[in-house]
Length: 102
Image 1 (cartoon, rainbow, N blue to C red):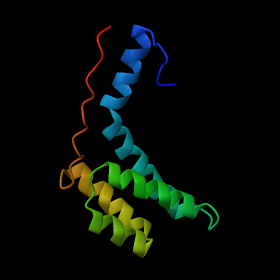
Image 2: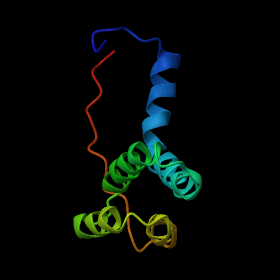
Image 3: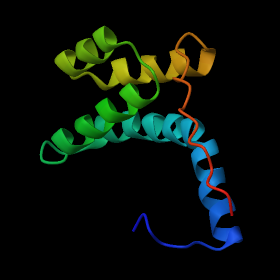
Image 4: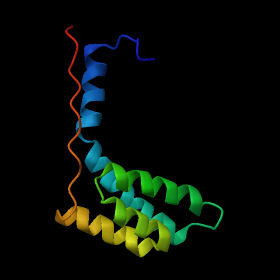
């Protein structure tokens, strides 16, 4: 898949997705907080794993992620979202990949 040639339009769409990924991850984490409140016991492990991945990708300190996962309290996820939105937790800067010459 990495060897595929994308059109200029497709490349721009892909680039915009990755440029906006922190905002998309933040929105998804907020949605997961709600889903965790309402989810059945069967769905919760998968949702918690997704929440963990998103918190790590958004730059949440490892100790905080471990605490949230240990308590398994959706209110803690909501607090993380609140801290991200207020700027207390800042997303890690993305590594910029050099674009190959077209």
